[in-house]
Image (cartoon, rainbow, N blue to C red; front, side, top):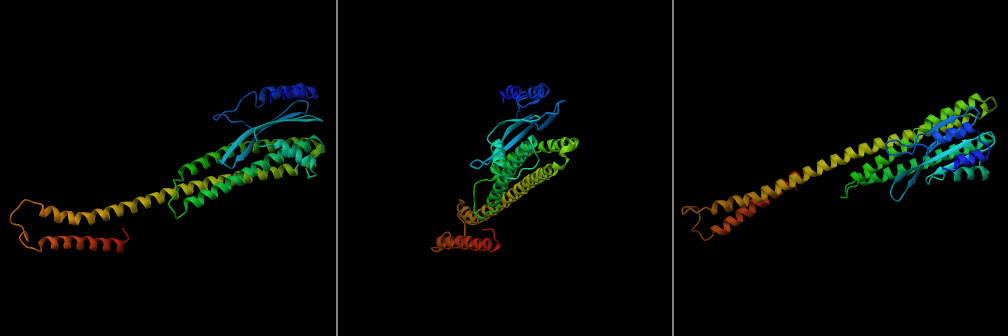
Amino acid sequence: MADLPEAARRHGIGEHAIALLLHKGPGAHPSSADHPLRARLDRSPDGEFVLTAPTLSFVEATNDVNTGALTCVVGKEVVLMCELGDADVIGHAVEKLTGGYPVPDEGVHQVLAAVVLSLVAEASDVEIALGDAVADVERLVFSSARHHNPLEKIYDLKREIAEARRALGPVTSVLPELIAEAEESRERRHSQPWLGRAVAWVDRLDKHLDGYDDLLGDMLSVHLSQVSVRQNEDVRKISSWAAIAAAPTLVASIYGMNFHHMPELSWTLGYPLAIAVMGGVCFTLYRLFRRSGWL
């Protein structure tokens, strides 16, 4: 990224565009968690412009969304690009241009079209991967078997979706500027439709990500409700067993009192009868609790 201004100077890019690259490129203002990279399109008085946009990639092993940076310097006859991160947008753009795939527009703008479409396509792949991850969490939450607490996975996915939306959202502000740039150029007015499709594509991706985030919020509410229901079931079971244990404890505590005149103390069958009564009471309570669904 630091070599891009010098490369632009060697290939005849004007000083105005190089100044924009130096002062407004991603290297001039490093992004952070509080101030992420913002997509922007800066035009110079010479008609050249600098496009800076975040990129997205997805790590399937950890369900992480990684963001990078893409910078394009578009001159009259040359396009210089530099990319940070592992999205490989430039590689996919080169494949489009050299592999015989139909790419709209013409000249240097055709290269730009390949880059923008590749960037949005990579974001689409990330959206699809996030959708699959959300579906996996949904199956986990609604599984009837006892499993590990899915709260961590839900919150992790919500964070990654927020990361994807934070990187994808600013792209929607750049695409209209590209449309305006094409409208100002009379000879390029016929090449605007692909930009409109790109805008619709990005809007659709953002709506899908918003839907995934809402679905995760619903799953979080469902999981908390399930936890509450299970806790109520556990409380009822504990209460039932406590009631069953209280019956023999009550009888035993009465006969454990140090009084001489108590019923059946001198009767031979008194002890077996007390044990039988305690067992019968416990069995009756057990049957009642089982019938009511508490056990």
